[in-house]
Amino acid sequence: MSKKKQIRANHDSAWKDILDSYFKEFMEFFYSEIAEKIDWAAGYETLDKELQTISTDAMAGKRFVDKLFKVKTLEGQEEVILIHIEIQGKKEDKFPLRLFQYYYRLFEKRGESILTLAILTDENSSWHPKSYQKQVLGFPVLNFNFQTNKLLDYKEAQKNLEDKNNPFATVVLAHLAFIDTKNDPENRFWMKFKLTRRLYDKGYSKDYVLNLFKVIDWVLVLPRELALEYKNKIHELEEEKRVSYITSIEQLGREEGLQQGLQQGRKEEDLVIAKRMLGMGADRDFIKKATQLSDQDLLSLED
Amino acid sequence: MTFAQQLKQEALQQGLQQGLEQGQHKEDLIIAKRMLARGYGREEIKEITKLSDQDLLDIEN
Image (cartoon, rainbow over all chains, first blue to last red; front, side, top):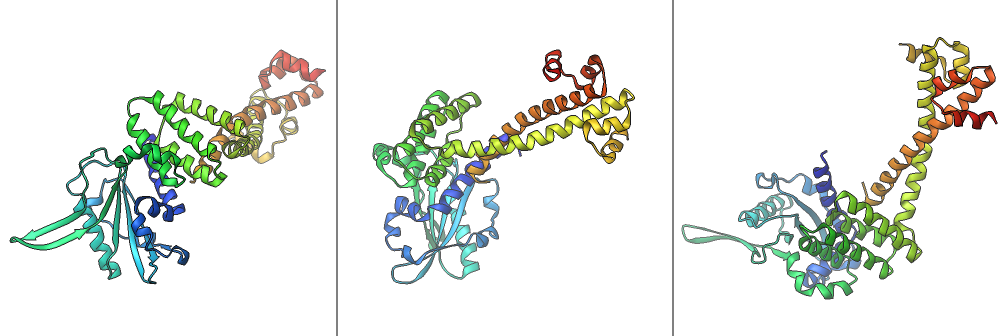
């Protein structure tokens, strides 16, 4: 996978993961009126397997994250909601048709209507698609409606967002920072650090910090040098706050790597030295004794 | 891969590199000691282990 593709894949999976962890919060943040109709205590179910079997030609080459959830309403009825997030999308005339195709494929499969809720991450402030309508011979045959929410539209409420504890407030703040700092890596570095610092200042739990850190990290990609500086700043921050959410994970990894490396390095060096000794015509038994290699190892060197 | 896993993986790679170098050097020293005990000369040991004079002095003492 190329570096660029890897970054994209990470970006997409950041959205997926955070939706998996915080679906209720997602609904409360973006679609609060709908969230109020859902019986959250009754739990919900993800139907991702069903989604995977669905694809349309129009989806090819598009970057989006989608998730299908089965929820229960307060009246006790089961309903299915499709969350569709357009990632780094642009205004696209075919977008409503795309959602309609999605809808009818799912309708065909499930035999019932779903509610389509989309998130738009593009930068066109005048594009707010809400429906797909079709007339044939002047006769309206189709009126398919969906809901959209555009991250850019939260710009005016940016200050408010900083006080909100909903994880998607952080997601939106990160996205707005992404738009604001497109050609300004230095500024992006500071915005990124400020957003990260906010998580620690608010005293969130370790899991919560890590989940949101992931989104911030993947939305606000920094060039290599600034990325290193950012990491250092995080280390300082964790020291200051006397927590080690990120530091402890890294320490664990480094320790494990060191142990693996030590073993591997010793074995590699044994083989390198045995080869040199063989080349110099040293005594085979001594080579074995000095390097603790097996006959098998030595044979593999001689081939 | 979750983000925590990725962080750990990055750190693990760093540790691995460090460990490799340390492990190689450690093994050089061990083997040099065995060669010394066997009566190999200093030049020969250096040739085979690529250790420095200082390294050899350290293990001789």
